[in-house]
Length: 205
Image (cartoon, rainbow, N blue to C red; front, side, top):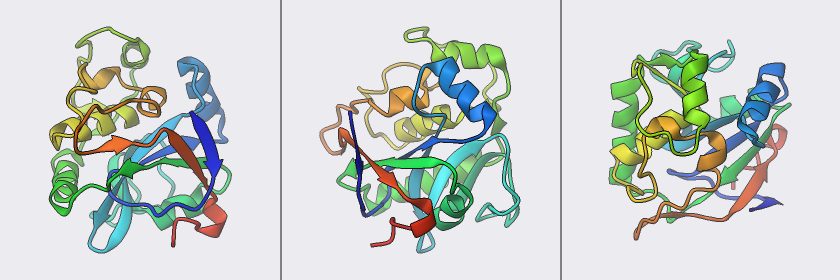
């Protein structure tokens, strides 16, 4: 899959892929044999472009749009605040075409409301099963969630890409979601990945 340095208009349904600079980011990439250690999905909320994600170590400068405070686990934060605090990370976008409809975007918002109290998964055994290719329904703790599990669950919940997401959402990693073909007649992810420069806010067009 090609990685292009480009300006791209970000919208609902787009996937954001992160290549972080911390040691735990590197460890995640090594564990999963991947270029990516974190993933989020773009959601429009009250005229703000936001990211739905699940995180382990929240920055004090990134506030959840509902609680108005730093938050681990499932959160919805503005894209601007996230990119501003991730200046040392490589952040890329895998665009969805076309962008999600207003109705499906609202379903993503509702998915966040229904899941915002879930914590980030810290179990190494769950991480192991999620990195296996075809291991079936192995997730045991549904009160916690990895970043990629959250995105796979969100797509399945709003009814996008059911054929492409045919296994347990717990079997998805950032690497798998960076290349997945949704096999959906209405929506698809481009096969190109575009790099965003957080310090220059290239996502604003």
